[in-house]
Length: 118
Image 1: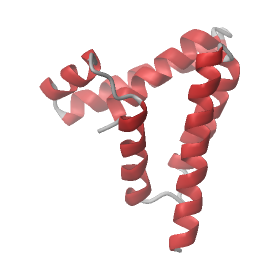
Image 2 (image 1 turned 90 degrees about the vertical axis):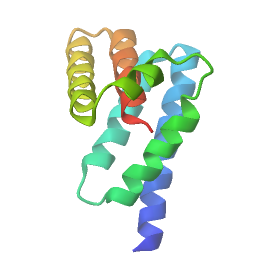
Image 3 (image 1 turned 30 degrees about the vertical axis):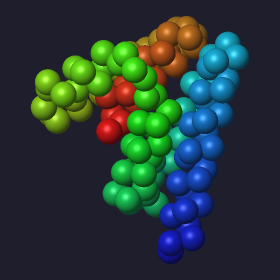
Image 4 (image 1 turned 120 degrees about the horizontal axis):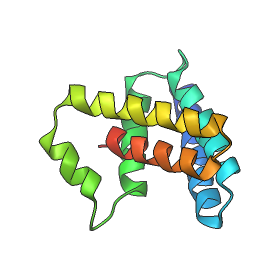
């Protein structure tokens, strides 16, 4: 069981890093699809709380910045409000994806991940 959890976490992290690399190269369509695959794995029944917590830690390392307004905002809001913002940003990402605005979709999704991270 432990090996399968490590494999699942490894796949999620690999997809997330691949998405970031594609985003920085300007391949927004590839970036959003990699992020969607990672989220699909996270929402599957095979992921437990430990995997989600380690994923949050990886997001924190990935998005660490000296000047991060989202981090400052997260400190002032409660968990319920944070979850509402994440859901709103994920919905916005889906709407942008439907209109084939891949850059807007991946930006909204990245912003949602920043609220989701530790």
